[in-house]
Image 1 (cartoon, rainbow, N blue to C red):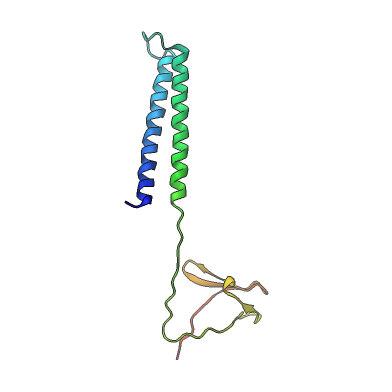
Image 2: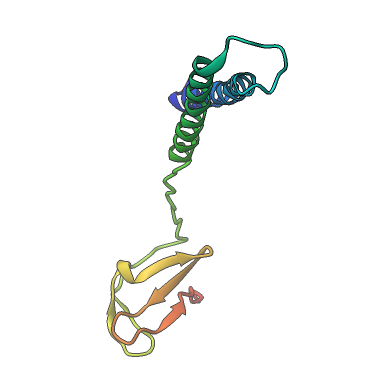
Length: 131
């Protein structure tokens, strides 16, 4: 299996342990506080154990949430297939004629957008017909 699958399984197990720790800690705290009638002898030791289980469950929940958030980061590579012969020429701004570099072109909603560093003009890059 891939390492991401094992990480996902680990996060699910951590979430299940966190849920059981929170539930168990809550039940022990409820019993130790006298919420149930007729149970004696739990006292302050039960309160301590219940608090530790509850806090441990919350800590595991935070770690599981942080772990799944780190796994969702992705790198996206965009490949552009240009038709026919392509000549690379120096690009110039439509408005002021200043030289543009690849740093001035960004993909916005799937379309290349040019931002001129000289005149701050923003426009969409369009492909002119070849004929």
